Length: 219
Image: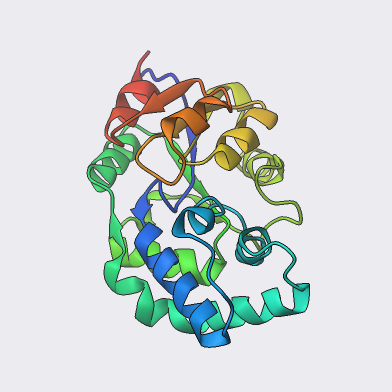
């Protein structure tokens, strides 16, 4: 089958799975348990897509790194009981991944989550069998928006940037893809608004994940 892209690199949070409320709830509970004043939900949401420690450092300006480390530990302790019950896949994700898989598109995840976390979530959503590789915060030293994770996928998969589409819901994802020489597609239903995504100059913007198949499989 002729297709426009042979490879798709996908973000996880806000792109494949609706994790926002789970993340916010866990973040709020972590701060409450540790006695740290909360920022607004919008300030927390703006950090989603960064590695977990960076979430705390950015959302809580001036926080000591050692305290941010403690927050990470507590957040991970609370995540399963607080976030998992409210995490779901976005509409059309499973069906679209199946269509791309059948068309021979090679798919990878590039996320700021940990290996254990994203593996568990993919399995619970029934999408773990679609990806040839999962790249996480533990895969590279420089995280999104640096291009390193996308470059690592391309290198290990032997894929050409011009035949690769990076898909994500934040400017961090789009900046990563663009810097790696890939085409980029923003999804507008996630954590960054359409206007924010537009500042990163994506090649495509979609409001529904199922529209991704039309882009990838168009000759």
